[in-house]
Amino acid sequence: MKKVLLSVILIFTVAHLWAQNQLLETGKKEGKEDRSFRIPLIGEMAPAFTAQSTAGTITFPSDYGRKWKVLFSHPQDFTPVCSSEIMQLANLQEEFDKLDVKMVVVSTDPLDTHVQWKKALESIEYNGKMTAKIKFPLVDDENLAVSKMYGMIHSPTNTTKDVRGVFIIDPEQIVRAIFFYPTEVGRSTEELIRTITALQTADKGTVYTPVNWKAGNDVIVPYLPTDHVYGQPAPDGYYELAWFIWMKKADK
Image (tube, rainbow, N blue to C red; front, side, top):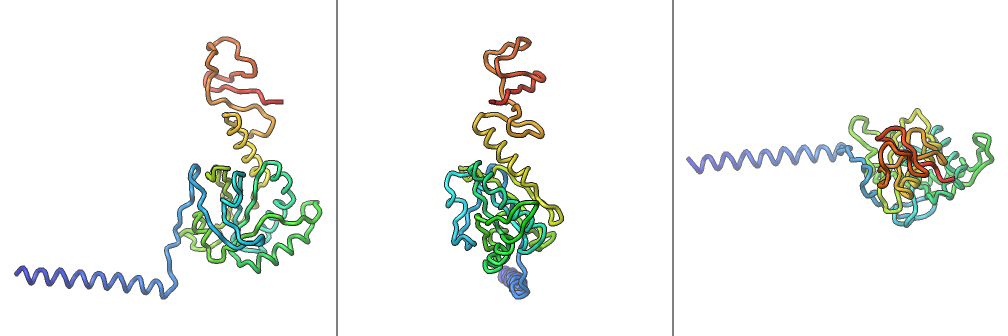
């Protein structure tokens, strides 16, 4: 009886494994794959990759050392919304340099297409500006390795159209901010610069920035001055909006 039972279990196990193998083989033949990849979250290390680009082979983020970095992604070359974004980034290269920020652009087309796209964009006058040379690299992500690594390919759509993420990465290679935009909406370079400036201000002064903060505005302090007695005049350079909201005057 035991031998019969063991035989039945063995046959069932073999059949089950065979069925699983056939399912996997069918998936491979049909080119199917799991397209759910996790977005690296704020506070995590930025995923590293080596890839070809219009500036040669780059290893991100280590090639840029202790600088701030922005990874700006696109689903395809020669798309009008993405083209307008890259031209604006090119016009703002000096602003990013002042903030000690290095820009890296990823797109899912091959390198030779990137080269042609870059050449075309450098010949267009956009937004009242003269033509600008694109000094930052356009990374070849035709194999979707970077898009998957940064969680921009997912099951509900199963396409590259959502490769529209922006990742701000600090000198310690930590992800500090993430933006995602739909294909229909151009991204805000003003908000990108504002966020980087706010992060740098927060890190430098151990402060927070309030709603709609811009460079030169007052900041929030995440602590109470240790020598202050509630109800007494605020220490020089500080003021309170409420007992739980302390402000510090901006350095002029």
